[in-house]
Length: 144
Image (tube, rainbow, N blue to C red; front, top):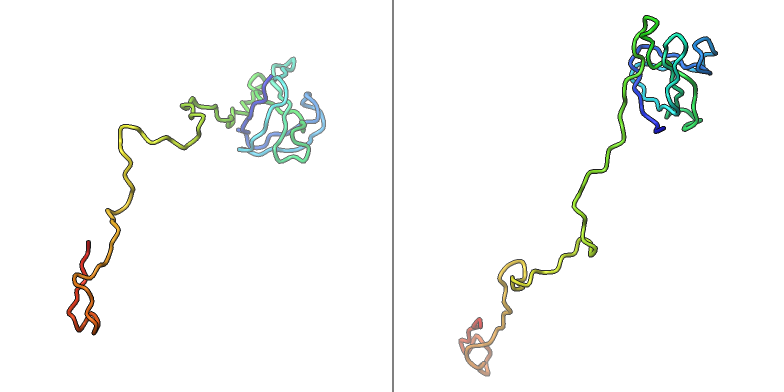
């Protein structure tokens, strides 16, 4: 048996202490609440299908809180529970390489630094400096 999640589809669904419909009421569930079955469905002699459930907001979770009717159509009622959200199935993804996210650089493409095309800049005076300083001799700087 695998636990299944169910959504309450009727207005007020009474949770009973045992699988019998005349047992003590434990709680009332409202439409839209999500519960989880903890055992296989049990059919009463009159055809009503009952489920033992656990409620995620219960302090006793994942222990069962009681029994509810899943299908009362045999006695003139309706379906009280509809299938709820199921856990996501694992999808087939390509396997990641053992070296993680690092990838070696392809050998067919030479290394090229990223960013702008920068070169080292060296400043050299175009003439030797005169004794009076660069302004006196009219020295200029050249980029090589």
